[in-house]
Image 1: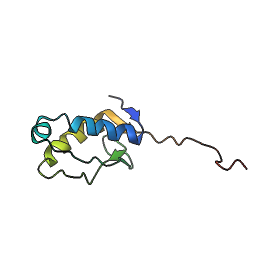
Image 2 (image 1 turned 45 degrees about the vertical axis):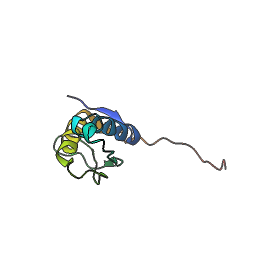
Image 3 (image 1 turned 90 degrees about the vertical axis):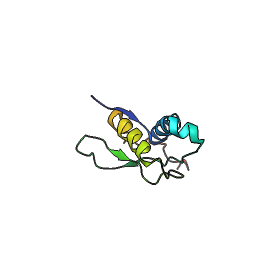
Image 4 (image 1 turned 180 degrees about the horizontal axis):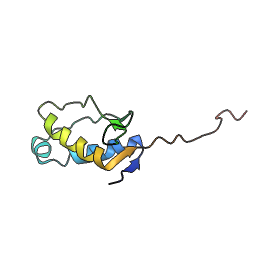
Length: 90
């Protein structure tokens, strides 16, 4: 399956959405801080990003790992850099 591409903010939001829909997280009412994805060389599956250092996640590591595995299988991090031009206009 070919991965879709999202930018860092979109990936962060997608992982956040999926984590906070998990039954265990909802039942405990916990708010887990989701870090920004970090670009890396594509791994053996072809995924080019990872996330580490989730906040307030003690006891939810296995759940988070499951979400990450699913999202990493579906999406790659966009590597396009938008040229905003010279902000000083010279």
